[in-house]
Image (cartoon, rainbow, N blue to C red; front, side, top):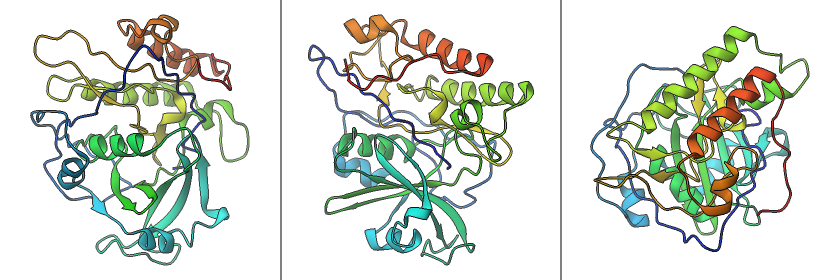
Length: 296
């Protein structure tokens, strides 16, 4: 997964209350094998009623429930040299499991996974962890990162994803080194189109999910530079019935969220602003925002 997480500033307004995430489209298959490849298959069904309880979300997810010991063995006890990246949620570790039994294997054998472990003192918490299970445990699309499983044991909160060999788009755009080479214009357009397809799926008539943290650090690349959206901790169900919008607590990343959205919570221009910032990152090869250290 590479350095798949960037530090995210979560802006919350006291004038907007939090709402409970519900469910979205359900994956028709429980098969989570073939983790590193892209597929043309798209799963989407009607949206069940919301909100749902934590138990309902975990029982209906189409992913594996791991024990903490399973993931500790898979990551070699979360060794520092296994760290792929760090962010508001916590650290991401590289691990290996058997393709069929999902039992931990020796490094270099089985399939590679990325294990995200919640930092109890980080920006995010159980609500964001549950949102990831809720959405990525139900949705499947070639341009969404695959959630392999999760761990909920005592105070431990972990998420297990397919491994994305080329890391995040942010690394390729803004970092320099032998591993992260600048992307050609054709590759940048390929990535942008892939990300757009992922958003189009989420905004579809049956899915209707608001993906509230669209930025280069949350777009991961496989070995063929196919883009996949990741990090659904801030995602929320979209409007249903005759509603034209939903009210949400104000959340996002400085520079990518529209100023009027952060100030008032009105999200009519949110999508247009965030996509414009993303395209500016890709086209200019430079970040368009200055990362603040204090939430608004």
